[in-house]
Amino acid sequence: MNVNVPSNTIRATETSRVDLLLIAEMVTPGARVLDVGCGDGTLLRLLAEKRGVDGRGIELSQAGVNSCVAQGLSVIQGDADDDLVDYPDLAFDFAILSQTLQATYSPRHVLEQLLRIGKRAVVSFPNFGHWRVRAQLLFGGQMPQTDNLPDRWYETPNIHLCTIKDFLDLCKDVGARVERAVALNAYGRKLGVSMPVFAQNLFGEQAVFLLSR
Amino acid sequence: MSETPTAQAFTDHSLRLAQIANPQSEIVHFPAHEPLPLDCGAKLAPFSIAYQTYGTLNAAKSNLVLVCHALTGDQHVANIHPVTGKPGWWDTMVGPGKPIDTDRYFVLCPNVIGGCMGSTGPSSINPATGRPYGLDFPVITVADMVRAQARLLDHLGIADVLSVLGGSMGGMQVLEWASTFKDRVFSAVPIACSARHSSQNIAFHEVGRQAVMADPDWCGGRYLEEGRNPRKGLAVARMAAHITYMSDDALHTKFGRNLQDRERVAFGFDADFQVESYLRHQGLSFVDRFDANSYLYITRAMDYFDLAADHGGVLANAFTGTKTRFCLVSFTSDWLFPTEESRATVHALNAVAANVSFVELKTNNGHDSFLLHEPELFNTIRGFLRAAAVKRGVAGAEGWLP
Image (cartoon, rainbow over all chains, first blue to last red; front, side, top):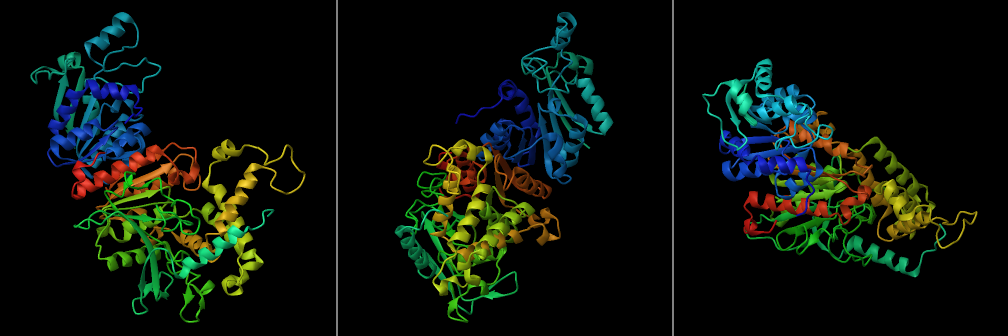
């Protein structure tokens, strides 16, 4: 089927297979899962195959939603900022926000909602503290463009980028408990758990957090 | 109206009247001692339900797909219509290899009660008087229609449905089914509809009803005995309604300000414009296949539909505890049942953590999109139904191509 998915969605799903596998690892088998910003359903399919979850999705793009529903996934058209408030407390075992936090209007509100409707939340995002991002801004003097953040500043959907340290601060502010935090380097390998936060923030290209309240 | 009824039209009229008592459909007669209790307090007895089926019911009786028709639809979903001679109203959707694939599913569509194609309605004979009911027919609701359909399934020995689908008023029936018979509905596809009929829609219906009742041939609803038919009133009702089924954009694309068979305007009230001619044709062809009193009763049923009001004013309460898999579909250009109406239902379903999909399809064809060739709609329905069949464990479903 020929579905017109926005280029940033496709790139994100192709290059972040490892972060999706990592998320799948964090989700317990048979769990009830909500994937917020589920794109073309790659993660939901993966979770259904690997973990046998009861999965639902929310996706903004019509093409993404149509593709998901035609594949038999349960997905609604909506967005993280507005549509999470309708769900009851603890409706899901896991509320997942994969590579979407940075594209929401109110990341704090969205994170709070995730922690309200999910017993646990899984959040992954591109780390703006990565050395390559820092170097581009420091030495190039321009807004960074990387494999994870491929769009020019004026066309990127990512309006609220953050670093791993920033995100840890936000977790503290909203009272989220970090159960697990994994940073992945540019090759998709996990950085050693013994590595201090400043190093993870420097060498992690993306991060995956398992949170609870 | 400038067009005069043709001989063909009169033939069609008698064909239509024949369908009231002896439809070219399967029919089940429920005897007087098995009445249908109605929301208005009356009991309908005896009553009949005419229906069409396509495909084969599997051994486990797990592949039934119930199709609910819209206001002016009927049970002739995918066969040549006995009155008009045209293909069924969802011929593009239902059939072998089509999205609702009759090689996979057993498709059943009943004519609603209040209708005029064999199910008991205002043109049926009132056993108390021996005359057509006319306005003595009790006012029915969408819930009454659905209860009658449940009785039909009981009669056929079918406990539950794999899926119930419908657009517009058909979608209202789908929501009612999912709310009232939670255990009997594995999946539900309400298309281009709302959980409550809006004030604007009630207003349009009232215009249509007033047009019918203003026609002297309506005879206070007794036109059948008088050998008359309020053709003009019903045609006007249909013309007004038909505008609401299309989008401004679609009308403009189709007709613009093009003139009908003339070079310049005629400075009169004939159909100068193509759009006028088109609407007159729509109105006239409608009266050949539909009963005026049925139009009054069924529009009223839609007006009364308010699922939230039936559940303490909270729509979510209508779906508490539901295990049904939902797939809602709306169309961007539908101003009769705009996307916000479907979204309100989605919000209610989310509030009870229901399993729900929701697709808003970008179309130019207004409310009627659900009846037309919309490939994205076909993909959605095909994929959703297959997934439902797999989840339910319908024999062979795992092997079906998506």
